[in-house]
Amino acid sequence: MSDLLGSFIDKKKAESNFLSLKDGESIVILKLKSIKPNIKPGYDGQPKDVLDFVCEVDTSLGVREKLFQNGTQRFAKEVQDKGVTVGCGFTLSRSGEQAKTRYTVSNVVQPAPSA
Image 1 (cartoon, rainbow, N blue to C red):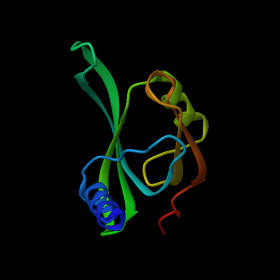
Image 2 (cartoon, rainbow, N blue to C red):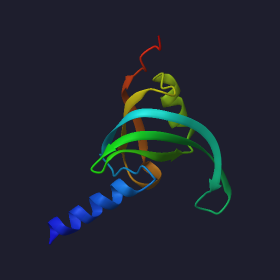
Image 3 (cartoon, rainbow, N blue to C red):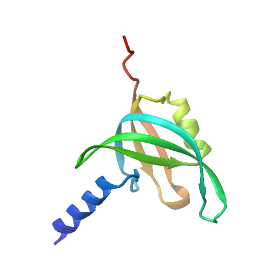
């Protein structure tokens, strides 16, 4: 029964348009396709500035485009300090839950220069 439920959960996660990680989980971003500013409702219903990261990731259903949203200055600085730009690949990791959630970037791979 747990295999059935686990397979169902994995399939739904692969099909989702959004990238979500659990505490302690990491994912390899094959390619960052774009970064765009956006406004979305916060938990309190008030508008909140976020960045939309459109990423290509490998899922159980193949390579998929997924949206990762983050509205913290700390994460934007992490991305900037690690030299992440459109076209890069990198590993995205999550630690903590709720207000203590932190995302970190590692293993940044710059895109090959075009000839």
